Image 1 (tube, rainbow, N blue to C red):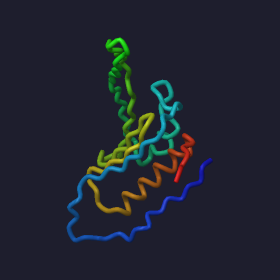
Image 2 (tube, one colour):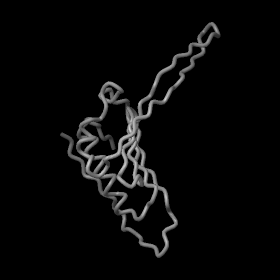
Image 3 (tube, rainbow, N blue to C red):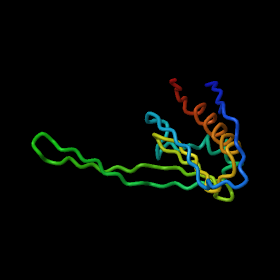
Image 4 (tube, rainbow, N blue to C red):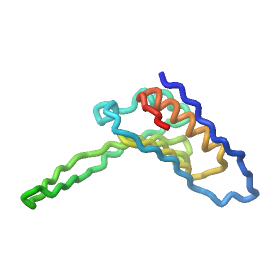
Length: 135
């Protein structure tokens, strides 16, 4: 179990009119082998299901190309799996694949709410997948 304390250290500014509407938090990490099409994030889904009941699974085709020493092309096709969790209103999305986690607000209200969501998702995610934090 990983203990991590995430603090913002910022005093929130509240404006009469907030012009920010969309906000994205994204963190990249080394490939998690425990996440794949055959190993979906079922435990995470159970934990966050109350706040994020929606789930969409996307399969994204990828083509990797290498130029060989003899000037020929080596082309390999793979499929990347992306899990997208959403709240009931579909205003907040949590995207996860083997190499990143992203939280997107389509109707951003304030930093406090956004930061609480980041802490909640990130804490559960790093505990489930044993992500190492390096400062």
